[in-house]
Image 1 (cartoon, rainbow, N blue to C red):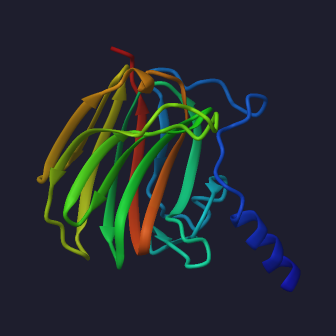
Image 2 (tube, rainbow, N blue to C red):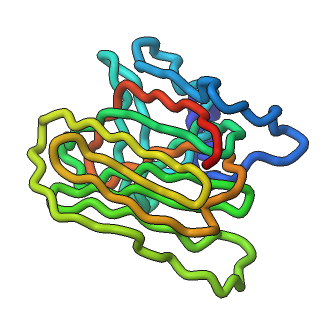
Length: 210
C-alpha cells in the first residue's frame, strides 16, 4: 500500500502537458462530439490527464480540491484534438473560490474562462513554451457577477476562429477575439481553486470555423 501511495503521488505531481504528436489521435471533425460526460460512472476520469490537486467522482459529480502542498489550483484535462468548439458544463462553489475552463494547445495554456463569486473573465493566456516568449496574458472581456455557494450555474463557451465567447446563464455574456486562439487545440481542462469546486454535465462539440 505504501508503494501504491508513492506511485500515485508521483503521478499526480506530473504537470499537465499537451499531447505528444506521436500519441495524438486524428483531429475531431466539425459536428462531431469532442466529449460528453455526466460523471455518473466512478471511472469517468480514468483516462483524463491529472495535474495538481485531488479529483474524485461521486454522487454523479466531479469534485476538484486544491491541496496545500502544491499551492496551485487543482487541474484535470480531457485530451482531444480539435480546432473550434462549443463547450457546456455546470459548476458549483462547494467551499472553493474560483473555477476555470482552460483550453490548451501544443504550447500549453491558450485561453480560459475564470469565474469567482464576484467576477467573470475571459483571457488569451501566455503560452508555457517557449520559456522566453514575449507574449503576455491578455484580458479579452470581464464582468461583475454575484454568485452563491451551493447553487449550480451553467456555462457555455465557444472558440471559433479568433473569436472567444463565454456565457454564464442569467448573469453575464462575454466576448472577445485574438488571432492566437485560431489554432488546433489539444485539451479541455478544469481548474479548481480552494476546497472545493463541483463540475457536472460536460459536453463539447466541434464546430466549423467562421
